[in-house]
Image 1 (cartoon, one colour):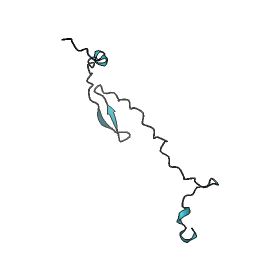
Image 2: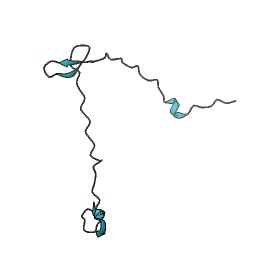
Image 3: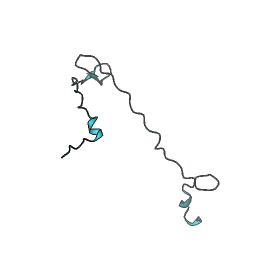
Image 4: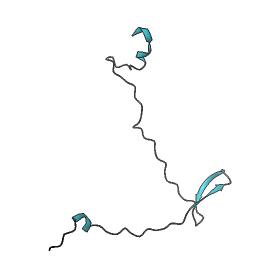
Length: 82
């Protein structure tokens, strides 16, 4: 009976590296601004990451199905002039 070879991808697998456990930061009230700020276990401010920019791919467009290029928005709302 012959041995079954391990799949190629399995031969390239390695164990996960050891994880580093960071000390927890806490939020304290800044007396000057009356806002919360993050402070690490060493007493220094924790740098804040930049905020995510809002995507501009979800902008609403006006329907332009007329031949003159004007929008047809609301054209069917005129009741008995259709």
